[in-house]
Image (cartoon, rainbow, N blue to C red; front, side, top):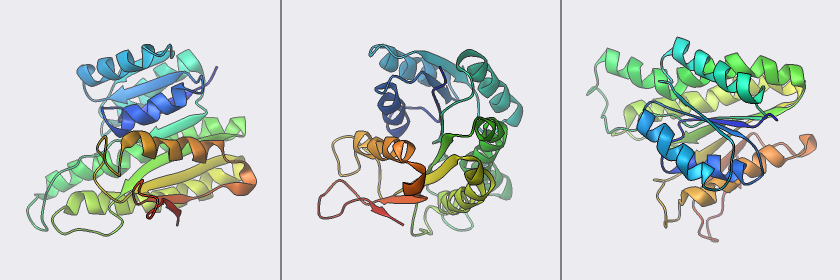
Length: 226
């Protein structure tokens, strides 16, 4: 049975999203850069009886990422859901990073998503259904977080490009833009945010949303469609 693949499945939002899809009975493929993260995520999911395929891959390493995705597809089949949640989150003011450091950040923040979608999107399109979800953020660019601001702007543009490419074939492409720091027990609790990933996947074609801006769980500031 095809399931969900979560790239960037570390503690926090990645685990919460993986857990949310696992609750629906989907097998889960989890990818992260370290064995420690993959093992911890896998252990948390298997406690609830989920079928898990864990893979170690750097999202910026195209060869490793494609190979890891292939191994998950070999086990579970082309996914129903692809979630790209990998990012380099760091403080860097304009002019502080070298050109190579900016390229390294962009490779994870944006290019890895391109690689994953280009690799699996055609298989999902051939199946005539599926969902590609990209984790967004930084709705307002912040000079002290330059590389991430640029990366999340790229994610928003990529969402539009992928929707144009794969949407006509039945693949729902959307982004969840998070307007604050994700942390358990706060207005940006990862379990609350993960509900929107499931909601987007479950939407019928005639109700597809392209983007959700999550402004916090406070009922006075609900998530809104943008």
